[in-house]
Amino acid sequence: MHIISFQAWTYHLRQALKNQESKMGWTPGIVGVAVATVLLYLYQNRPKIHRDGKSLRRPPNTLPVLGNALHFLKSRHDLFSWFVRCQQIFGHETFEISVPSLPPGVVINSPENLEFVLKNESSISKGEFFRERSWDLFGRLELWHSPLHC
Image 1: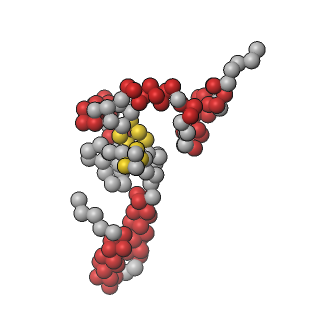
Image 2: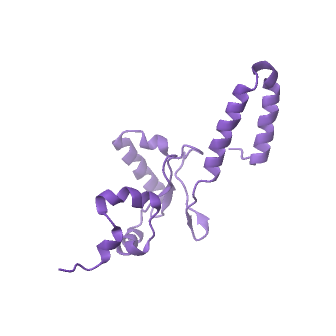
Image 3: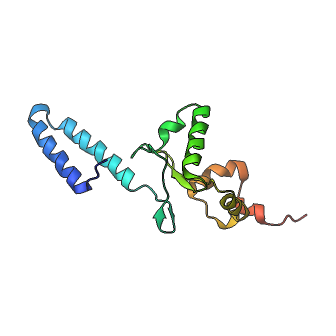
C-alpha cells in the first residue's frame, strides 16, 4: 500500500481533473473531489485508541475507510469465526476493531485484563456513544455502585 500526504493527493487529483475538465465539464470533478475529501477527512480524524503511547493493532484485511464493516455484514457464524481467527493471531493481546458508522472498539482477549475491566468498571470512563445507548437498558450506571437504602 502506497501512502501519500493529503497535499500530494490533492495535487494529483487537481492535475487529473484539469485533464478531464475540457471533456466532461466541472460537475463530476467537483463531486468527486468533495466525496474524496470528506472520506479522507473522516478517515484521518477518527478517534485513536492507544496503549502505552502506541496505537492498538488492527486485524488483518482491515480496510482504510470501511474498517471491519464487511465482517459484520456476514452471517453470525462467519463473524464469530473471524473473531476466533483474530484471537488466534493476537493471542491475549487487546486489539482495535472499527466500523465507519460507530466509534472504534476494542476486543479484550486476556482473562486478566477482562477481570480488571469488570472489577473496575466504575473507574473506566464510558464514551457518549455507550452512555446514550445503554440508558434504556441500565439507567444511570453510577447508581449501580451506590448502596441501597430501604
